[in-house]
Amino acid sequence: MNVIATDLDRTLIPNGSHRQTKNAMSLFKKLIKKNKTTLIFVTGRNERLLRDGIARYSLPTPKFAVALVGTLVYKFENGKLKEDASWKAVLAKEWRNLTRKDIARVLSGIKGIKQQELSKLNDFKQSYYVPLSIKPSSLLSKVRAKLRAKKIKATLIYSVDVNRKIGLLDVMPPSGNKQAALEHVLKKIFKTQRKEKNKVMFAGDSGNDIHALTSGYFGVLVKNASPSVKEKLLEIAKKKKLKGRVYIAKGNFVEPHSGKLLNGNYVSGIIEGAYRFGIFK
Ligand SMILES: [Mg+2]
Image 1 (tube, protein in one colour):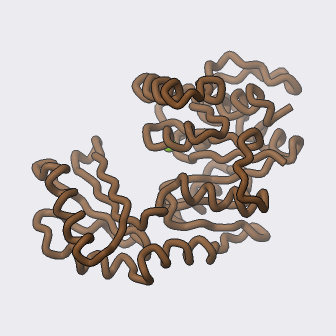
Image 2 (tube, protein in one colour):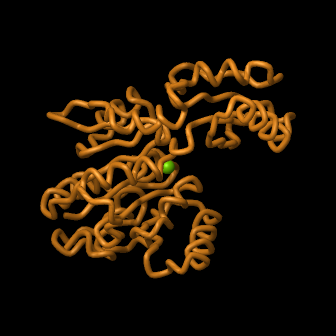
């Protein structure tokens, strides 16, 4: 059994500025069926946006979805999303049954940061807006010190929303990330602790996908990724000696069964990569 795990926005979902090949999604659905490929979505979206995306872009139905950057795992049963309780238990244990509300209380004294909308939070993800005037390094050390004082271990992710010109801070349990959640799902699918490196391909488009793209599985970066992400991926792959296991879609690829010419953007890039690594035959 082979698995394709994929990011959604601008990877499987063609919602970027690049052109998509017409009908590439329906071809992908056929190939998934034909090759009996198991599909996993890995996304920052919450449940509502995940449902919206699936309906709006008529995506194939996955077996699992890792949502809200790894703090939630869903299983699809009879077309319905069901939260995976075993992942919730892992995260709850790491935070000793505290939730994001407790984290909010611990961090309440930090000036200038503002809690994000509830739709962007869950029990294991407490997130803030940070004005760009606040230096990330000093903010992170303040946050770390407050958490340490309460013996709370956490992953802190700081990023910048360039469109809205605002900093973003996520506070999550140590395993609250896409990669750890994906590993959890893969163990369930293969029913083994062993890493099935030659049976899994991850597809992505942006900087925050690089970790999963270079985690030892096959990794495909779609053609519409920015030049800086392409460069960074090759650099890290070289460092980790994974050069033969990562691939950047080039486009101009003819799908052998249909004869369809694919341009390498979004789902076309996923199909190209799947053939490259023998996931599709
Ligand atoms: Mg993306």
